[in-house]
Image (cartoon, rainbow, N blue to C red; front, top):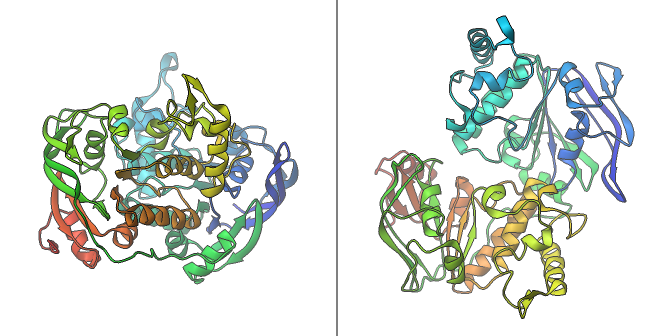
Length: 504
């Protein structure tokens, strides 16, 4: 399929999200749309997929102008979309999700499970997307859930796939697997529109790169362009891709974790006897392949999951099994792994979400009543400081892009006086300019003598930001090393090998 977008413009009131955007995707091509958070990438894809209607411009498929009034029409013309937040029914099987809306039936209009399974197996083998058709979606890791989304599009005969921030929630291994899948799809003649802000992925997989900034196309580039060149085009200024830190001078132990045992939702010990210290003036990175207990570990520390045994102390005060409110009041800041479930109230305004953990404290409350002017002033300051792209501080947080939702949480936590920051995947979904700012704020927090425990699946981030690196495997710490340790050695620790251990 050959796709052309000519002069696409989309406005929301006085705000122009897409301003006369034009681009072409050829058959068998991986065309990357690169831009920072709020640049208009997802809006443009929603226009293409029939979820929004352009105010100006036209869409052409194989030279023929088309106008979609809904996503069903786009699907019937061979366009499939994999959204950043998956559109799957968690309690359905893989097969039930893939054929949803296009179900093969037998007598009495019942779903023909055998035929559905056969269809999924056929498509999955053809495109190297193997997944068990009878598996229940909610039991699958995120990477396999994404395969289900891609299978769903391919099962509907998609010739053009829109992948909207497809790697935002994937581990490095899952990202590599997705890159291979994209290449095999392009080799089979499928056209791919790849929306991202991750420069390494762009260079690794794209054939053509179109960069948009503030709703406009600002240029095109070849994948041979340097990361610095792409970052500058994307953000509109020079971006420092390296983390600048002063010398590591650790102080006293701020948080002490001893022999922690925590069970997951199935009752299995996801954290099995973990002991760690986090010191003043340091950033301790917790690395590992997702699913090795990091999520349960952090949830236990911040009061979201019960501790079966062991202790967590903060400045000598026992916070084991305290409520999230009590833990926050002790001076702990928390950036959760799942921003929508645990970090925001999506129906509340940006301003209210920015004081979500301090609504009853001065200056945001006075004599039991909310101080609305203080809430607004706080929001206006943080929106500016953290470059949160929103049409209004009164806009619901749920209407922001994923990256801007993350910025709201980061801004809220880093604007408080903290003893320790505990963060899970804090830069997931952020563009290079925003990552640069968030890293600088975390380093500032550390330079002020505070502690930080940061979970990240991005090895580049782990190595550049950490003063020490603890690696978690199968619910245990497989090693604690310094950031001069090789990537290969850390990779070994991630698989449970002690060959890479060093530094401590």
